[in-house]
Image (cartoon, rainbow, N blue to C red; front, top):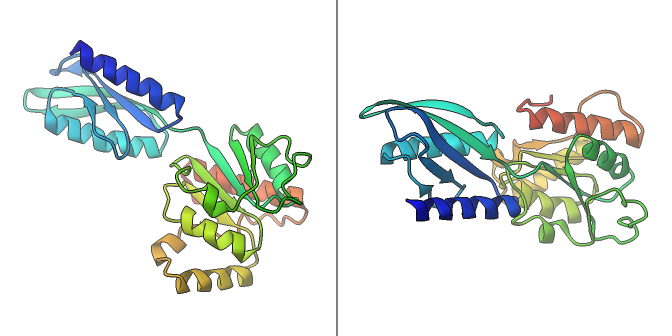
Length: 248
């Protein structure tokens, strides 16, 4: 038992250091073994046990759903011996905004996002746009194509914002972002631009349920005109998505 708990805490520490999503469930009351723990990670085997395989499975389902909502709390379960209360504490990855396109709108958007607690990653293969002078305030500035950067980095606490208007950048990024766990995916462009975008993606085999995830034209309709106002409309929609609202 002591060895198992050591592995559990070591794994938890490693997940936190790597900013990987993880949850820890602990029996706090009822007929179960008080203090028994279970560590839950998306796509990984369970570590520890709450003393009942059916309870482990039920708690795993709830913990994974709570991770997606960045939510912790107490849940009650009925097992063979009676009722137990389990405290599920989640550790979602930090909220990160991936901004594809180092255009002028991205400059105030990074400022707003960082003020609201987002980590910011600006991606653009065009060196003339993605300069350290323009984006000294971003957490990461990456000179690369988005479909080279995004795979493996998007989590349930990721927010992807596409600003380039360029299908060579936007379309490959969408093919990575739409099937990913990212909580929000939005793309700049007029309704006509978006209609053409959808035609291209459908022709490339992107399924309708993925296309339905895309917020486009991006941002809340607040009559925004300047880059700063457009950035306000985008961050408002992202915050709505962060809190589980449609944003529209």
